[in-house]
Image (cartoon, rainbow, N blue to C red; front, side):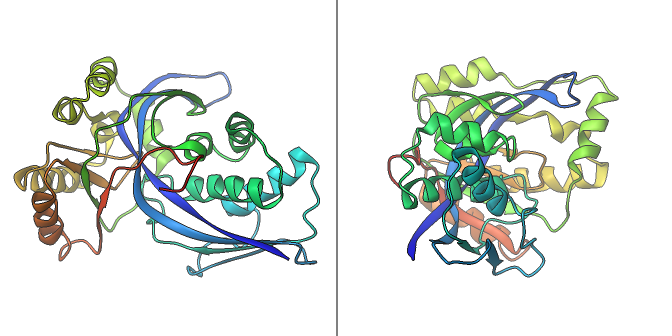
Length: 294
């Protein structure tokens, strides 16, 4: 048997804009994405002589093709007509589930990267992204990570100048958000404010971290149920009061994050929020993932 270990890194939306609804029922998106060092660990084995086995440290996660990590393995083998002689995936989750940080998509992308090396396939990043798009809209971005503009359903990617390194506090409140309900709410209202995506990209180009932080915005915040919106705002205000350059919600939430240029301020914000929210993390920004794990 051949084995390897890979890591799956969480993503944040520095900005998120929802455009028109498409004929296929999806929406066109315009998002600036960023990888952070919060990560899951995956152990992959090929040549097990048994059908695909999927296990994780969270008993409620699917253990079949309904888990995106397993779906990615099956898609890779199908698209490349590769018989691995049996596969095993063991997943250790750290990224919160249903948190707006693409944890499942990151796991799928890590499986694609890991099996690409383990099976000696030598597929390009572009080809892995194509296969990833068959699994989920965020998977193509998660293959390479870093700082990127994601358009279409999220699979049309343009690399951007890297976000200047900074400290990040992530805080996931203890409630879930229905992605279909948020899209439905957006479809039923006039979006009052949109992110300044061009200005944000300009700030990235200039290496202007405060300029990026000032322009972070997520249109889904405007259509959250009122009680949820108030809690998101309270977390954002706490982060800013502790020195965050800016704060926003990631994806369809509910995770809120703040960017800090001083580690001491980030540590203070983490210490203030951690007693109130169990899933609070102190992490850093990360670069691209294909050439080496960060």
